Amino acid sequence: MKYLIVGLGNKGDEYTETRHNVGFKVAEKIAEKIDAPFKSSNFGLLAEGKHKGRRVFVLKPDTYMNLSGNAVRFWMQKENIPLENVLVITDDLALPFGTLRMKMKGGAGGHNGLRNIEEVLNTGNYTRLRFGISAEFKDGQQVDYVLGKWSDEENEKLPERLDRFANASLSFVFAGVGNTMTAFNGK
Image 1 (cartoon, one colour):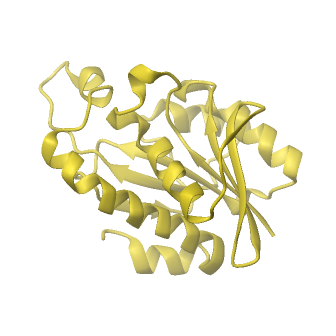
Image 2: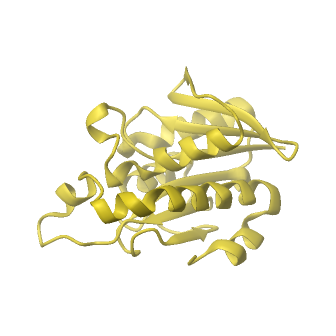
Image 3: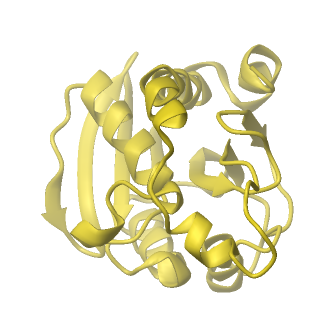
């Protein structure tokens, strides 16, 4: 069985430590856990490893957030990975910092990366893992907040949350989406 885990983010040093790139951070933690280094490949950086006998492809697209769908489609087709074995990790303003929410399907919720994936795949029926970044910004400051760096307090808590999200992602691979939602959602 093959699985594709896609961490959404933007390429470039200026984005590395921003809230919007938390999908990349989780992807890096997953690759570390399965001892799979990232290598430059089509549509981004790809790590390939195994978890409990299952092949896992971890992708950090280099298409920029708003064009992530092409990268997802390419790797699904290249490796013949079914939609039910795809997990997309993204930031979410609607959730308090560090909150974990996995859903089997749904809308883009205003997230341009998810919107593009849905347009390219022509469906929203894929599993997504949302990392709460909260909405601690004033009117008109959303872009600056999302593309801003973590606060000191968030940075202190981030390693534990990244570990938790990586564990949830690997649970998705081994235990399935339903069991993972029960075990991890809201925690």
